[in-house]
Length: 324
Image (cartoon, rainbow, N blue to C red; front, side, top):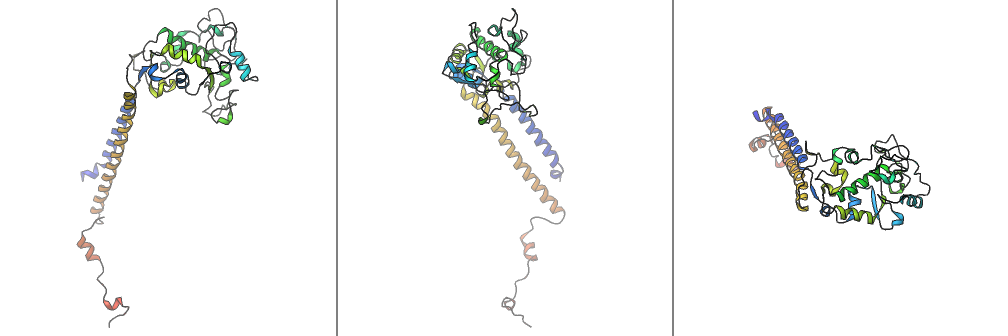
């Protein structure tokens, strides 16, 4: 019948429906914006959640780095000497937009001035425009609206620290001196043939708690991406609204965020299950019809079954005897 003839077409229609639902789910994963105080409870959560595994917050200032300084001497130098006396900070171990060696920059090197005398970044990298846009629109820190000047300064400081400091290279995830191989989450040796080994990722660099707390205080009322707990890298994967550089913030509650993130996958799972059941039933009915048409039906009337059954044996046969 027409039902079986259109079975393949029904399968195609279901595949199209599933594809559209997947597209709808992706559209539902829009950029969500909340205040820093809503996303992070304190400076520790900010530093440890925003950048994934890059940083860990430490109370002891003699065993932790700062992302900014105003002294003539870099306070991070004695920290590296204390924690990693055999580590090499005469090279730029991170490699992305970085130089090979930390060298002095000219008088135009003003944005990231603490590293002017020994910098792993050039003056072209170290200006606020390129720091903001260097990694693409997904990595802009103002995607939820312009930040206050006090808040933005901390993002500039972190960017300068990452791009310019030779000390951060000690904590390169794949090929960093500070790695503890026993953790199974980093390596001291970079394997260029392993596609999972990049040259830019930082792992568990200790950062001063007072610095992270100051960052949180400066930004607590500013808006930031709240997807995935405010993880910068996860937020970067969410497309920016076309032709909008800084979309207006959407103030939402934690409950709303959880509802949006859970509803779409749950709906898709339900549709997939129902679709599988529908296809299974349709396929079974089609098989039943074809067996009927071929004269070998799966289900036969009860009378037909009884007519095909052997007659009841005689008592003599049951007793193992044959009457002559």
